[in-house]
Length: 221
Image (cartoon, rainbow, N blue to C red; front, side, top):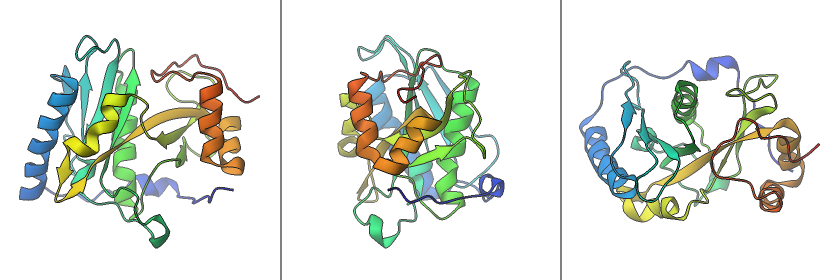
């Protein structure tokens, strides 16, 4: 059985205003070098225009590089700050970035990734493998889907990308990717009742693709 934590709408409006510190500027240069090594040159970078802390950009890496036939979106800046982990989460990554795979980079994907990247810092909390975040209360469909309304965070199944902790270390701490995967309500309920492993088994049974498909139906009826 999963633990459910509830946050109100105000949870997404607490981001403190500030300017990049010397350490965050240094982290940004190191992180961008690691990204270029892993993904090639970014086709575009969606810069955060308001000076928020941390400053979160979203990089769009196109298909055709590094043997990829899909676009890869990654946040840059979430790992500038350590997340606030409870004692029970000891050993979980404290510095993370979000990653998402799609056939076409769209503004709504980028906006959601940036919002999710700010969430743990705004609320002095954390997100890790197996955590879920509904799109509102009650959850509303995401990105043109009629049924996908919740975000799951999990290890990426794209093998080169899982090597990020060896490529990017900030202040002695490895940075991990959290893969952002949309779920349906029945799938999320399965995870809440039977645990994260049940979702992993479900994905394996259905050969869940790593590239987002807004037309995907629910694996649980």
